[in-house]
Amino acid sequence: MFPDFKNYRFFLRAGSTDMRKAVNGLSVIIQNEMKLDVFSNSLFLFCNKQRKLLKVVYWDNTGFCLWQKRLEKKRFPWPDTE
Image (cartoon, rainbow, N blue to C red; front, side, top):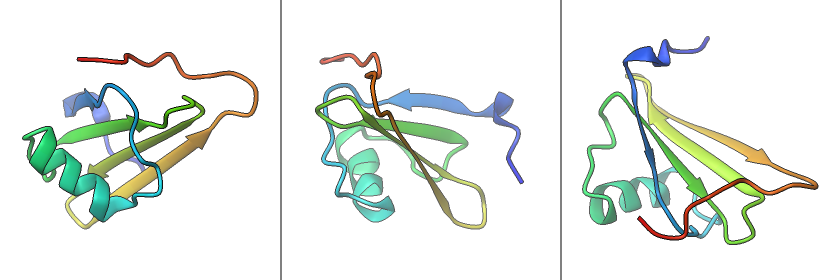
């Protein structure tokens, strides 16, 4: 069951994020550092320093969803700064 993402906004956090963080830690970054509403119809993307691990967080009106993708050989193209 996947939501219809056409009505969602996408926010990417530039630079690296500590990927030991789970939903609670990433939600704190969204609210305190990015100054965004974690409960809005938005997807928030985070990447680690090596650019091999990507996490996506979003609220689906019943709870938080956390998706993770790890690359074995290549790296995600990711901005260093805003």
